[in-house]
Image 1 (tube, rainbow, N blue to C red):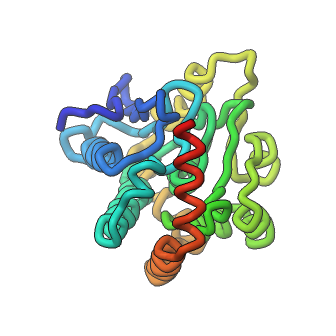
Image 2 (image 1 turned 60 degrees about the vertical axis):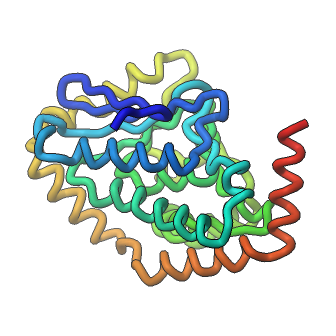
Length: 257
């Protein structure tokens, strides 16, 4: 596949998947989602057995600012359902990847961007990174496992606070609470520090890395498919409601001015 919205590069035993819709703050549309899934599967494939770790990051000042709201607002019920199924495949491609997937969050990680980071095995974040699941401000809820993985990794009370208010928090706040592994100061080169962080993984036995990933995922409770389906079902109800359609339209119109 020829990529238009992402870049896939390898350096020694590390694969880098970079979101490259920087003018849209890397907001994710259907085409971009397909490309990310394809790249993750390529990294996971037998033809790239030399790859030991995958890093996902954003180009520009955002990791990913969520879904492309213009596409999102115009979706029919069938298109919306297909988009959610696509998202489920994306997060599964991260969690079920045999390689550790590290989110290198260089800026805004909102909505689906935060959900991608939550699906990853570890998170390295820049000091200026911001994280949020702001769907409630559009009378919606997350649909990519955000309610499940945030509660699992952060704890129910703090997850409720972020989900019910939609507020953004910084990398240091999440690092203090164990969700972000390390924060890179503004004074340091971000990608250099990301490469230093993953360097020990490059020295490890790849089968051991896969085994540890599977075991820690199981130990943390894993994400139940039935709960993901419930999340998507409820999101569809809200998406088709009048209040959310009004708020989404207002958001689109505000951005167009």
